[in-house]
Amino acid sequence: MSIFWKRTLAITTITAAATLGLTECGDGAAEKAPSTEQSTETQKTESTQLTEEDFAERIGAAQIAAGSVHNEVTMTANGQSTMMSGDVQLSDDPSALKMSMSMSAPSAMQIVVVDSMLYMNMGEMTQNKFVATDLNSPEAGQYASMISQSNPQKQMELFSEALTDFEVSDETVEVDGVETYEYTLTLDTATLLSGQGVPTEGAELPETMTYVMNVGADDLPRRFVMDLQGTTAESNFTKWGEPVSIEAPSADQIVEM
Image (cartoon, rainbow, N blue to C red; front, side):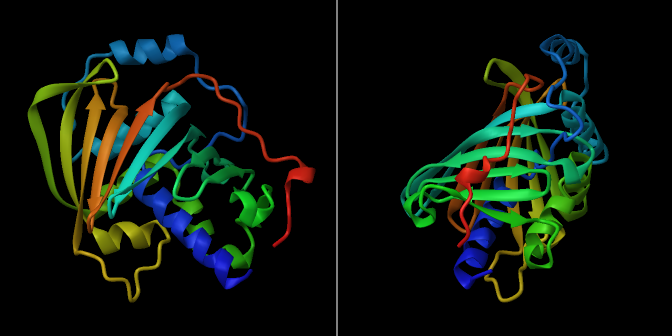
């Protein structure tokens, strides 16, 4: 794999780790997600506020039970904004990750993960086709490590391990029509990123990073905002439990680089 593609994949990995850390996993057993009726029943379940001791277990379990989510992300750095949107299928089996994301300006990109294969379309740079990377190959390195950590419960356990401070608001905030409590998590940067397979050697990173999460009574995240060295990312989670279909690109849409 060329240095160019390794660098590109590294950027994609860090972006995913920073903005999709709550949802990086898929359901390879079936294409369907739990019904909307089941999701609605879950929302009706009375719940107390999350605590420092139980937030990881409760959020992770709620995501697996939901089965799917739509995610929209806005990243802002140096006065420029990048948009990401797509769907993720959820499961407790990280090797079954299914994800389809599109990224807008400054450079358009499509990312699809199916059956441990990563497909990236970078427009004219890839002849408007997808470059395929086997996440099980030795060359995949840190990207395979990130996928192996993509179980929602494992991800939230990692948040718990990296946690240095935990705060919860007294008042609820409405997000996408759902009443949520706002949680502020201060996380050890090195612990979080290394646990997600992102190399940190030589990187100039702050000791801690802050996530502000809005979580509903159903223990499902609705929004979180991250701030890291002047780069902010706002991620909104909607359509929990609704059916999604994520397929790999056809053979004629794949190109070698």
